[in-house]
Length: 325
Ligand code: SF4
Image (cartoon, rainbow, N blue to C red):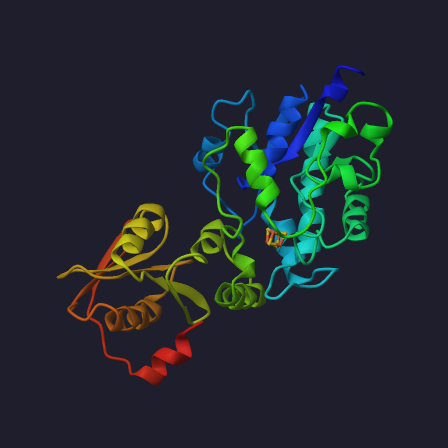
């Protein structure tokens, strides 16, 4: 029992605060299991996340449950932030994943890099933090080492598993104390706090809202949300790349798994359908794609074993607007 209580799960996002939480718990000789919770809108590169942990005696774990997460985004119990970000419900979801993992590996508690008063929704007050814990069945089992000294005692502090005096009392939006701590732990590279959740972005929120209305057909359709210009052709999502680097990335990611339309006679934008289109859809898509590939005269459509040449017709600005998401 005593041995297991040296084991904790740290919710890790790649940002400085959660990285500090990992460092603090390691400095207190805990066995640390960092957990990254992926969502369709907060989906970081795991290699990049691992880089932040390089040299530390920890192994990154990930958890994800897109279906459950999308239900939350569609109908959050605690409402949205400025855009489509359901931060309080999202935090409950993260905590539930951490609890599941904690039970699985026999850890005793969960640690976060949360700072009291730092964020307007989920970290605005201790009562919100408590409500989040409770809904995830983690009451008094979440340690926030950055703010713990100015928060009520958790079970771990009461039971002497964690020494409160070795923790910190950081509050509010200023990051200066975290930067000092980063120096102390020799942390040089870390992500900016702004990097991350697409649901806090206004244009992305519109796109997600539209998707929640129509639903999505596969995991690729969720991934496509972060790429290109979006159109709905006969209820199917069609995405056109915007720049050369995006064309390259989309080709690499979706070129062999989704129906693809590309210029045949000149370099230019590409378009992918989230699901298999019919002949008429392909013609409309070619007309859309031509608007963004001025030099193109012919397009090539390919999916599975089917390849065909498509001669694009012209569509005007109004027709294009009607298809735009
Ligand atoms: S900003 Fe995004 S990832 Fe962070 S709590 Fe809010 S909804 Fe969740």
